[in-house]
Length: 66
Image 1 (cartoon, helix red, strand yellow):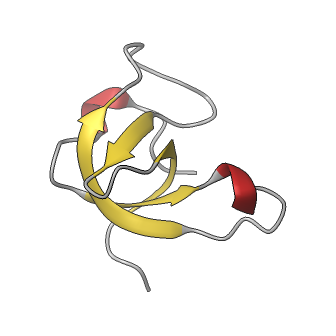
Image 2 (cartoon, rainbow, N blue to C red):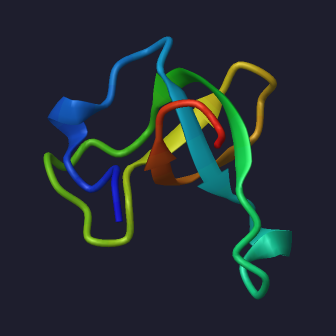
């Protein structure tokens, strides 16, 4: 899984997150990082971010959707 190290994440990056409602299916929602919400340098479940459209969740993938 990508997105466990805070130093890999920068504002403006394209990332995939799994929203609460999609946790069972694992469906990714793609967007651009606006804010990094996790203060710890490493988080095993993924760094929590706020996307530019306001959605908040943990990163599961880095880069553009495939």
